Length: 176
Image (cartoon, rainbow, N blue to C red; front, side, top):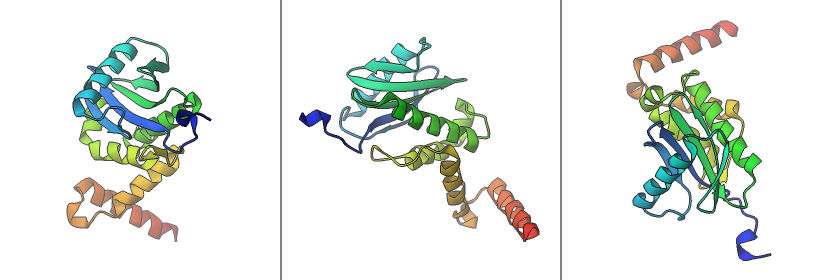
């Protein structure tokens, strides 16, 4: 086999979420295909230009395979090599999107994502670690993120988190 066709676990090159103006909200690059921030921004600009008006779900850009979807005012992208399986990339994209849908309570839009940007990064980190796909089941990813939220010290939780935690504890005690 040729060197660039060897199998690898590092299948994801980047995950990018842009707003409807092509501005970056979340971007995680997992290799040195675009080593500088300037090169990443240029790639994102070209990516948005190519996909903003398209009805397709797959694009080939700069020798990379990109799967994407848009929702309200957000564009979600998962980037892999040109040899990468589009169905696998799409399952990662769907997992990220569906997990965001669960976490953001079906309000997957820029305003809500900006308020919960930390959760957005957590979703990406739970699904992909260093370019390796770790999960594709949105329910289990959402459960892990919600569980992680319960580990936050009481002094660092918002009032809503404290109230939700108290409600959950009451529910569990009633079920016992």
